[in-house]
Length: 471
Image (tube, rainbow, N blue to C red; front, side, top):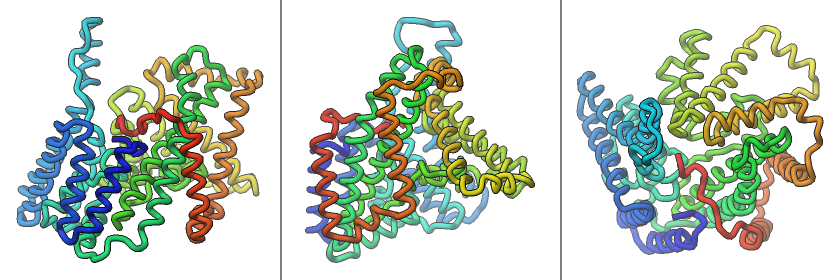
């Protein structure tokens, strides 16, 4: 069930009306029913996996709240991790390892050895439920007492498929307040609708239109030249940002209609002035998850500079593997890890700050441009079908002689639109225009009506699936 579909709008509207009329625990039950309907629309069998993950972590959390023996507590935590990673590993990585075995045995033709269907959202909700169990184990969170509210935490339909990855300590208290509240909404209606409309605009007007630009190059990578490869990389960066942030904003807006505030998942990543800054702004909930549950347990920055760099690299490598089972995703994670440790190492050099100071007023623009280029160079690794396609595109992009041939007219036009998008991002960071619009009710209504009209008239008729649905 796509966020851009009429079916989703009907589900959202019916659920909202039900929650307005209902009181107390019945609101939670209505949201659970909507969430299971939403997820079951993909495949009924996937509801069983969701239920297993929720039941295991709820029971483990309750047991952790009663168990004081360290060894038994570690065993309970291990049970949760094994079950969740086992489910995730089987459904997400079985096909990949089957292909590796097939290649290793020299088999060709005759179809696939095995074909496991990836349940939507499994990478997100398994990480979300594991964070709950780990936080209870660490003593940072009291075990949930209500299974219905915990099931809603796991399955809450606005953020079930592609996040944001929420923490129980943030979401469960909001569900408690939802039960206790009298009137459902007074403040959340307008901001929620604004977020939904802004997300729809970014998805159907920007992201889906850029899809054809990107596919024209990636469908025939051997025919790409310097400019077409770079333009496709820039376009894919904007496409995946507008696509994924659109999902996050529609999710946040949908949740806000019920008075539930989800975390902001993106903070203008294209104004970043370093790789570290970029990852503070990009997929914030996932970055925070890996920071708290991988990087810090590995030692963080507490064990010396070399161990810190190693921890950063391992964390990003695992982040790449989280995105998908394939050599390109592992390589992309390694590339991002190298960017982060290179920036960290350079920033610790004694003369680095004085060197940067020589740029004077140009320091920020230079750092921004360098960061944008480095991030853009990594997008072919992420987007390409295989390593051969990745190598073909990057070799063209790194050939300076290719820049001597001017881009053609369509490429120049696309670069112009991307430059306009980047300029809008910079202006938004400096002046927070969207916030100013939202504070003026009349202006906000006019702007968002215009966005709705533009989305209906200029939006792609056959909308693409959200890119992160595949993860």
